[in-house]
Image (cartoon, rainbow over all chains, first blue to last red; front, side, top):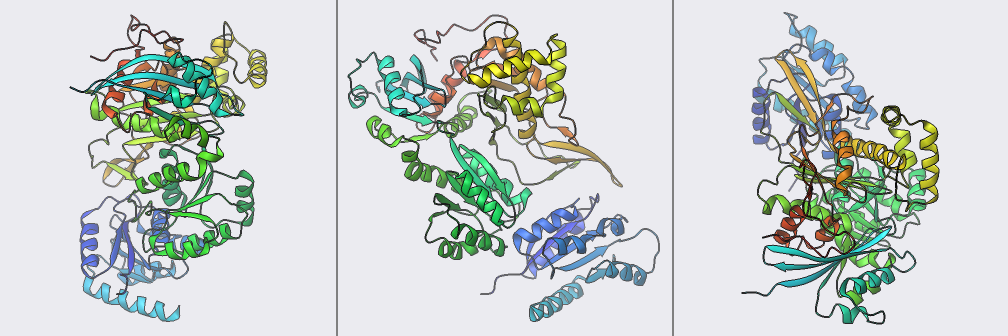
Length: 142
Length: 491
């Protein structure tokens, strides 16, 4: 039996939105993942520390309150510092304030080192398909 | 009806060996006599034998076996530096924090803490320090393995020959065992099997077993244990068991702290129920146990006095000024206590100087034991971010150890709890808001701690009944410290 893939989940920064976080936890657990849910108001250090202790393959970051850009800066660099070079970083939610086109948002977060970026209306089935794809690709390059 | 049981409890401290004779009748207990004798460092058994003879009125040539023939003995020791443990974890705030918590709740003193991979220099430092136990943790079950394997390999090639306890990622246990097959290795369940899940009890039990099997002999206790027909335990483990027993058996005694201030260390125990969940409070870090012990090896009234003065410089300076004392008076006193660690303050300014040092020790131990909270403003409004243990609901504080067990010194304890926070740390400490203060005036906590595993109810009730209430105007019934003959009776 293969051991389930561990993913770390949480809402970054000073963001207290907890409903979507619970839905994501149930969804990914239902898909067979071992979900380490850190809940709301999670700092970058907490994501990295949890990923280290649990040997996670991906960090799934939510941000709903519009400050995602500031909160997420440096997470990729922090992972590299901690030795988590191959960590998959996903981010989703209402990532910026205002009506910035999604393509611009996506470009911005990919430049910060995120592997996948999702808007507020993302389809979770598509997201999990992408995650499985990315995990397979990462496993091959290991 | 059962007949009352007579029991002897002996606690070998670093300076004094104390003993007491108790009579237990079901849930009720009575102190019949107590005695203290200077600890005989070169042969711990000699001092213990002398105190036992004095306690039971035995003759000098009575053998210990004969003396204790009709009376079972319970024994604890914190002599020879107590139980020293080096804790190794992966992330400082997670598995290292829990390794330290497990070590301290097993009655140990953490003499070194290492996160992530051990360097050669770290390993040399551990070899030099030669702790009684090396506690190796890291990774959740099925989680990170590289780090504990690297650390196990480092330990394997070191000259450290003492016991190693592995309480890390279960998935790496076999490989760790293979790497450390030439060492004395014990394996316990992971202290953090899942993220933020706290399972320190198995490690705590394992430390207790290692203490009995491997360490008792090295501390010069093996022969004594045989003569007394009992197994010793580390003193703080018994006290923590007593702290766990009190809320279970004494009505209205929930949410309290015990501060045991000694010459070299300050032990801080708390039993506090977690507050009701509040959606405005976000809790960070690992969950806190109901019963918690921390021990500060740099805080104490004698051996550790120089570091107390250094770390609480501001508080000490303020108090000196308030009492119209200057630094020269303190300098002189520091020289006295450095030369005679057994010095007992008599008269002024020594008593005030002891008080100032005691307040500083207690305040810093409290700040390190208690959690903190900070206000944070979010787009959804103001919230509180809390880390560590919330002691705001603590209703009672008990002072124990030579200085704080004297009821007249309780005002120093009160001041320590009322003092403002240590500068330079962010947030506000979660310290008791309006506690009542008590003194363990007969010094019974370590001795009753020895009874707390088998007779928890009697030990808990007797512990509370023998306290002096520092807030009452009239003193409690007197207990003769020298003989304890009057005793205290729990109806």
